[in-house]
Image (tube, rainbow, N blue to C red; front, side):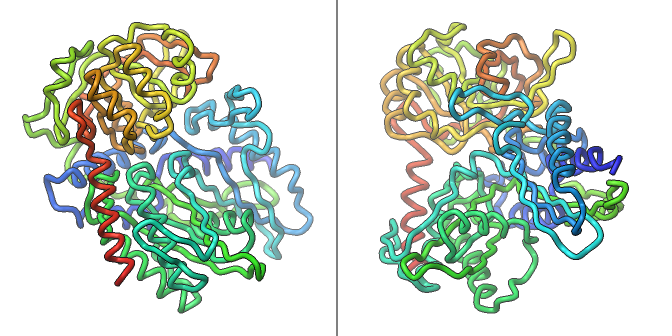
Length: 505
């Protein structure tokens, strides 16, 4: 199988950079469904542009390429050991090429391996079949949506929905609750894979495997097919909307399987997937290792553009922010304002925030903009280049953010999904704002980050290091201001009321 490694690198590259046709079609429907000039429409405009940019540059659609998960079918007699070696080599090569972000972190030491290889990474599931060729399917599911996976043990009480029993009505309520609780942190509009039954561990696996189905297929079980259609219609009435801004498009797919269970257990396991729904597959010749067929896509068919207009449509009402920012500048901003950042930004994710709880930053953060981002970076000689750089889920930094704002004078935080009451209070007390970027729009934002000025704390690994960047027209929306207002809290309240109404229908 002399060509298998190159075949697998091509699979990884295409999965990371080119959304499959069924997802494109569903996202096209979402774009058409949102009224123009709304926050939802603005978000989808950036998303569509980003999808096109990723194909043009063969760059990651989203900088968070997740934990690569392979589902492999092999003929009897073909060495699974050899295929596993080829997959690991291909993952390392794709990481080196910037198609995957180095995401494999030692759970005991916190050290990033740098090549996406490590204990149990990448994830590989093997099964034999009676065909003569090899089938490899790949899903790249980012950490933001992975964190919004949820499992229910029925019966249970659900926020805004009340009692959910051990029946399909209870399952319906659980799935609707799963969509609602993801809010903007799951990068809506999303899709859900669901398993009714099984045990805790296998239920989650079967739920994730439902994401290998195409969005336009029909469940062979008529009862589950009916439930899938109902969930899709009802979830879009809740009003979470793109990126949790509110709107008509919250869900683009719902795929459900039922598995036998223990008498004592009734689990509903939900695998939440973001709009950057990256999964593809190939059939491979077992002798040569060459690709003989693509799954989910026809490589001979031209890829149609998603964006109706180029980039982010400017109105002239955008507010330009040039750091360092003053308290007066920040307090003049209000929820709903669209800003364009021109100047310096510093990235900071989980490791940086934990570090700042005990140690001073390596740079002056007074008046600074702190970007919740773990970019994909490539180095050519002494020069670093930003290859993908969308916002990460900010909620993870809630335990730290108030301290960082108070202690170091940070004036603006950029991320996605919003933050909690503790951070909102600190923003009001000390004069800071939350700027919402569009989750997954890694290529769109990478093009606004014109220069890497420096990097600090590289011992944390590329995604977790503090990158010193120069931005030009980095677009974001104020969703938490210095006056105690939060779009996220408002949307959560409004959608909770709608969820209650939908659940009672």
